[in-house]
Length: 445
Image: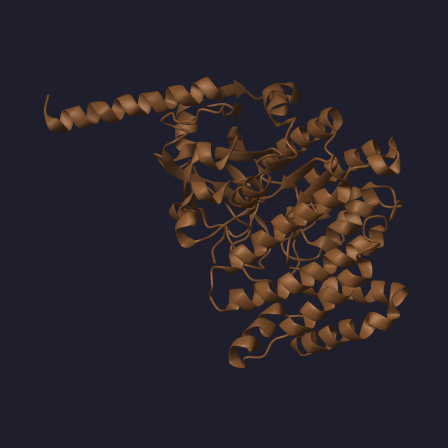
């Protein structure tokens, strides 16, 4: 046999081994009972992070909810942290715990999400889960109710408003620090772009003011946050304000480390939620695959980038961390053609040849749950292939840029696979954003 023939034979043999490994790990996924193995695998962990390969796919949201319900009902998971703004999600938290806005249904509460892209949370899939969660909580005493919280860093102005409101009611003598921070940001008309760009033109920022405010709020809430939900809310809003200021200032300089500011903030909030709910608490984290899949198993590590999944593994290995990814071959998705544009239903083309999605398609061809064991040295789990990530901005004709080089066995502990997917069902059409935000991965820096 010629050298070329021997090489082709080796490639064919390896491809056969990859497909065989995938099949050996996969179990059909048709109903909630098919998650038994994954639920058992995740039951003892303190943190279970559940991803999504896009922010606009019905199957990802639906099955994330199914898995979360089983972990809550059967294994006592006590809180959920999501890739959303703290103030918006705090209102959801109050609602699902039966404390505020009880005259509204889930769709009415979700109508309060105004920052683009609203479809990430204001959709039928999330509404159905929230309706269930409120009913679940209503049957339990307050200390046993499941909370839902926002982990993200974007809500600078909303968080400042919430801080001022809390200080007015609880510590009016501390208002000068809050007003100083507010006045520093006032000239920028609640536009983070304008604020961030101004710091490049004139080397002067509001950093010192928000740091002083953070220290003041922490001092005022230190002895109260454990028992007083409003004090805990104020403390988290102060943390958001400080980290948001740094995030925007870093981002506008073209510094990719702004990704690290954001993901470190989200991991820090996870730690605070775990501490707030007590040493026996167990949390679920809902974010995009690019946040919850360990960055060290992708090319992100080459740029010095970290993410939530990596940080939680590093900080809490002894507590148990399980990372669950999602993937699909083709279908439709809700996304936008440009940052701030209205949403539209887009076709997701068949996966690129040689990608993880293509290999899963060849091996399985139907929905499956794959749970990885301790030995991840096989040719698929240890191999490095492209793994599709679709953000809120998506251009199907430029698919090559949507694949993240990934070692599947290092990035996740389990994967939920779908052959064909459908778009999310938004509760309303997108309006032009009132508070513009910087575009972030997985749609591009």
